[in-house]
Image 1 (cartoon, one colour):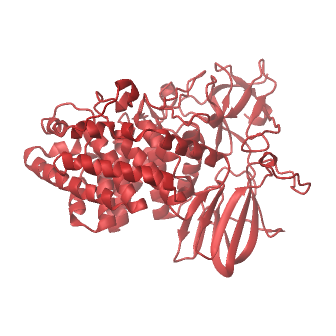
Image 2 (cartoon, rainbow, N blue to C red):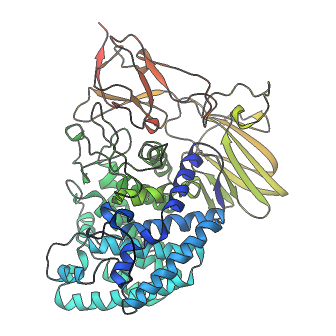
Image 3 (cartoon, rainbow, N blue to C red):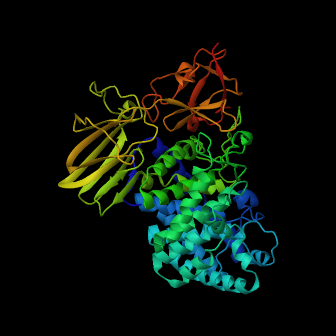
Length: 593
């Protein structure tokens, strides 16, 4: 975490919005449900408290604080954010106080009796999900900020879980696998990895036999029409178990999950694959287009799973997946003005995104959103120390400190004149976001391999030069172009040519979406009015790019088009730029006579 930071640009603007929101939320409101459970009296009117899913009458109350702890921990590690650290330390101290008042073990924002309902097989809304968020936030606080208090709380909480799971083995083993418990395997395995304490390994083993693993091992599809975000955490848990044990059975489970969830199941052009929180059956995307497509929790958690799989396999398919979901999920489901989340990303014609409020909603996707915008730098860079290889995985303005000797920066190679820089007539008139400049600076010459991911959307041959000298043969190997040399003070210029492409649905092939590289374009129109194209379906027969100077992240407007030769022409812009306008993603393909 501490080796990579964002630099000014599109992703940092969104991350900064998110960081401001983390600081804006009042500490006493973040803690309100833990205080209530511990019997700590607060003198506040209900209208001043967090409401929605954080309301004291909601059975998921308290889940959001765990997300907040995770997000704050990531930023503290990346940026040495002292202001956030002070707030996080206060919150963790208060959680320790609540735990002590609850008898020394229980750290829930909900009553322990909710787990009695699991034992009796009575309905209760996801108590293990709620507790998992708190445990995971404390785990991240310990891992990334060295919080001893957070770890002490987790040791005490583990004792509670050891007692409860042991009791359930005799009374009702099914209870352990209920209450949306999927994330528990990963957090207990992670704590064992961190501490080498067998108590955590025991808990991981008690959560390691869900029915989904048996179905995946048998080659069945346990996902279709099932709750998407309840299943993905199981795959993350299996990934963590492989990470700490190197037992191949765990990796095979993760790969089987990915095959079932992604390889064997088409996705919308955005990368999303669910509707109303449920996995869409293969080959049936078209019939599920509506207002509740692409739940954001699934986007975030599948990106995390892709990160695991890239680290295990080195295959660029996972990095391409992350990139598409960064633009069309992470950015598209965050309001670029307020930073607030969209629970779902509607795909229906004439849709309008529904944004959460700052204190009155707190959906599950509210929590994953605040985490999502803290992980960009970590997913931009991967390092293999044994092979002396540094991977540039995502092309986002950022800096990586490889050692005290070496730093590598990357940025879009365009002048941004609105930031006070003077005009430079030698800027080569760069106008595309896919002109990338990397600088390697070494205080002492050092040899290592810089691996550049060649995205799967690149149209034609990339252009790469080092210190002004163009490389004649840019041939990728397994999706990467490797620069193996002794570095000192060097500049690499990269251009990835992008083009317009179309994406259709398996069951409604006439419905067409438009993309530029990994970026989905949305039409600024309230209905599917159809788009006429030539007989070859060439999108450039229907769309023409429009460019103007801006005073925003890019000095030139990016990925913006206007239809041509249509009965009624309209603009298409990146889906992530849409805020409150009606938009349409899929259009009926028509042909000129």
